[in-house]
Length: 313
Image (cartoon, rainbow, N blue to C red):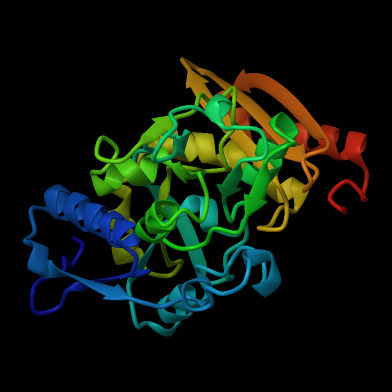
């Protein structure tokens, strides 16, 4: 019988400190509490600052790739300072430290990007030469391949910070993950319009929350199994295999989305030149169990078409 946490010996949940990260940690806590009929006091949320949170004055590509929002949290997990770590899966490297594992995902939220502007409702409404803010190389490249006339400026910070920059006129529009707006409960309160996936293919694993644990922690493994969403796991297996085969990082404009239809998985992936001058896209469908292999397959096809210099400006 699994020894359950209690107010005297709570399960420690590690997370970043942004409002969205805290909302995701609270969702994890609430799902575990409901699954095991535990009070909220049986869980303790610990905020851990990451390099990506601390360094705000430089683009992400200048301070490293994926892992900027996870390293310090994973260090606390390995050291035993926390029992689980809650992550936005689109921020996660495809490889975890040897002693850690992610095998629990919460039900995936809306995967779409949202167009956010105080005065406009659609990407097509932007005037020639308009200024758009984003810190995402993927969104920048996808935007420029459709609208090379636009000016794209660096736009880092959490949701609230980016909304404030819009209000201050730093840019006329930006993009945010619809999932984050839903989880914060503000989708209907701000001028945001979700963009169809066939217009802007989302980031790998966008809208998904993953929970990381020590591989040796059997108690936590048993608890997390009770809240794992199988379909999200199947979709991410395909998407993250695509990313891993491409050796993607924050410096690589990569997008991908897996969709389930009965027993079939459909996967679309794309890579773009950072300046938005070229895009390579592949699609594949097959049995859900073959998702990871399909992700590897279309990644190899794209690599065969693009060559090693594709991502260089």
